Length: 482
Image 1: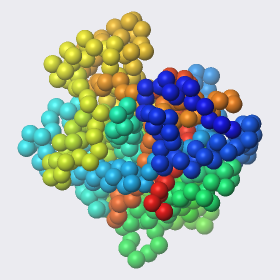
Image 2: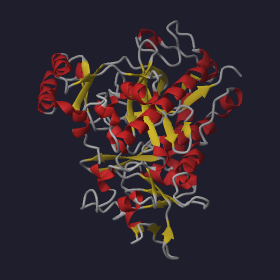
Image 3: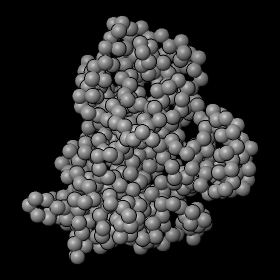
Image 4: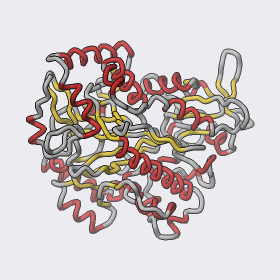
């Protein structure tokens, strides 16, 4: 098929495949030539093959709705997103820098709070945090690390600048889809993988297992690692079971675990109790331990926080790590990096306005038609407003929310987020996208080679979340020097 990008030539956004002269970017040249060499109708044939593969492999996600929980096949676009290794190397360095600083920040907040005493981070922001856990005060986890798994969302603006949109430090999800996307692409497009130097991503389960195993309190013994899931009705259950299987870990629910009088965690088995050393929890803090958090939780394990505080079990991510998973805290990350590391941030934040500051709040309220306003602790694209696309009535309602609780809101300019070719019927059209790499920190640092590219499947939409109609692409980091 010959690629004709009439729409692309009219699109003002940065395109991941073509430059402003509509020539393929260096890293995407091989993909461009490959697509041009396909026969008419061949992309559609391969897309049908992909859809059948996704159904056969049972790759699903759950959408919560008023009609009940609905399992849907994973929405996947077969045209990959391509980035040069040279550019990626700098991004990876910036991601690691960011996570190191954030973990130092979290550990400081739960201990000496030097950053507050030195006037770098406002106490009122901490006092208004929904995710600060007083029960975690005085704890320093192994390696001083609280957020062992981080999913950082990146976007590219019109001028090509990569910005950090947000950090996901509580229970970041999506890495299983990144891994499955690659396996699907290798099945459907084996030829291009033989001719193009696409860096691998399949070492993530091993890296994750090693990062978790390093948290074991029993040095010298092979640790028992468990993935703690809320159960089959959770939207990310596919990922929980997938990662447990890939790591050789056990998949458990709260009712499968118990904590004894010596603060040790055991898994109930038909052969009797089996000690668990590390828990990769996929349950929010509130439901983790009914003795400490929500007493009505049936998802967690009574006594789990007691065992963790006693150093008898490792938990990733640590309870309380979500204190840095706050869109208001996000605005302070550049200062956090300078404070703890004495370095300039490698990756930039999107310019932001804090509604808790009167002058910035006034600006936001008078420019709601030009800004994106986000609540501090929501995720998945919920609770936010995209001003230029909202009605006047919606903007007025949001203004009242901001006035009522200014600490809970921050705003950013509406970026012209980059696009990439996406298959719509038999045509390739531009769709906006972001990128979620995954970074690990425990005894070592690791970042995925690329990450999960999420794409808005509807024309003009900036919402990439699968729960709201978004899809995904494989992400190719291409070494053009080989």
